[in-house]
Structures are given as structure tokens and as C-alpha cells.
Length: 343
Image (tube, rainbow, N blue to C red; front, side):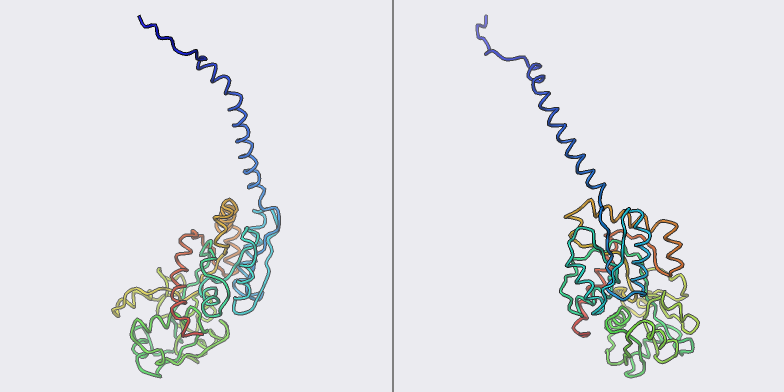
């Protein structure tokens, strides 16, 4: 017989019963706290949101921003206003944006490439590329290599052959813009000296297009959408994009480069415009970041915004933030590489 007696123990079920009230109270606090956080997230935003445009009113970035403000405001249920802070080819407005708190109340609309990249690497804006997050490459106004309709050059290869002859060709550019950089990248890949081409500089897109339409320069790489205004006067030799252009009947730029023995080149001939947030927003305010991205996506995919965008001749594509950032990061590296030549 075993005479060992176990110490006195309270039944397990009684211990569980004693702990239930404390457990229930703890769970109630947890549920309450979660409810408070969720409610706070649902309440944001409570204050008006500002979209900074670092250019004057009336330009393409300004049109995009005002369209977004009009159509995003009802979805946020707060006013969304556009503030123009022009100067320094975008540098002043981009710097002002970074000086604002990274809380989602202030956003930015501009051409991430080339203008934001150029403002940093060429214009000396006191900000860092990695501090900006493009939420969608909403408007990728890809480039075209174009000549006047009466030009003797019928293909990109013919143009390149002429480019190998010093002084044979002239090209209209805006210093540091996508078309200028794409031309330099192409020439380097083909081992053609930059001095072979006489670059004629212009202050903006309108005079740039006027020069080509008037046959004042031999070729340009310019934004395809904007070039539609002179489509009767010019001919595209190549589309600087990964897919065929909707309005330009020309082969793809990298396909033409491949025919000349050149590996695929970065495509930076046009402008990539969209809504930009502080890069730290996603980490510091993840729910606000998600809310902004979701409202932006819903806006771009809505019928009313697409109708507005078609009338305003701006893009309305939803591209994920990850894909969008990867697209412009590649172009930024090209701007960074060529910046010393352009300062």
C-alpha cells in the first residue's frame, strides 16, 4: 500500500473559474483598445489635404493634380486643395514638400522622372531621391524618336548613320529632360561622340515641339502624348516604350537598337507623372498610407475620372507603388550618371 499523501491542491476547475473574470477583463481592454485604434484610423483624414505642384498653374502636372483633387476629395470626405510652389525647375516645391510632416496631409504631384530626378541631381535640391515614394506611374508619357515629315531619314538606323557624321544632325532638347538623356544614352551605346550632334536648347515643351514641326532641327526625342499636337508635321521613327504606342505607328526603340547590336537600354524618353508621398509614410503611418493608396486606386479606376482624364489628355493608369518605384528608379540612375555633364 502506498501511504504517500499528495499535498493539498485546489481542484483545477476552481482555479480556472477564479481566473475567468480577470481574463475577461483583460480581453475587454484589448478589444476596447483595438476598437479605439480602428476608429481613429477610420476617422482619418479629419483635416484638409494639400497637393503640392512645384510648377505654375496650367501645366501638365497641375492638370493632373487638380483632377485628382476634384475626384479624391469626395472619397476622403475632406477638401483636397492644390498649392503651386514653382521655382528651380521643380526643386523649390519638392523641397517644400519634404519639409512638411510625413503624416499624409501633404502630397506631391510632379514628373518623378525626369524633373524630380533632375531637380535633385542637376538642380541641387537639398532632398534625397529615396525620401519620395511614387504611388502610381499614373501617366507614363513615353517618348518617340521623331523627325519632320519631310525628313530624308526614314528609319532610326538611317538617323544613326547620319549621327556618326560630325555636325550632320541637330536635335532640339530641354537640358536634362528625358529626351536629352535618352539621346545621350543611345549615343554612348553606339559609341558616337556627343559633339557629333548640335544640340539646340529650348525653355519648354511648346517651343521644343514648334522647332521640330517647323523643320528647324533634324530630330528630337519628345513625349508622345504632347507630340500629338504636331502629329501632322512629324513622323515617328521609334517608340521609346516597352509596348507599341497607341497613336504612333513606329517600331519599338529597343527592337531597333537590337538590330544594331545594342542590348536593351533604359527607357527614359518621356515623363512619368503621379501622386507622390513621403517614403517614410508607410512605416510611420501604415494605415494612412493604405488609405491614400486605396483612394488613389479607386479614383484612377473610376469611370468619372477616366472620362475626365480623356478630356484633359492626361493618363489614368493604376500601377502598384512597387512597380512604379522600380520604373522611375532605373531612370533616376541614368540622370545621376549623366548629371555631371549637364550641370
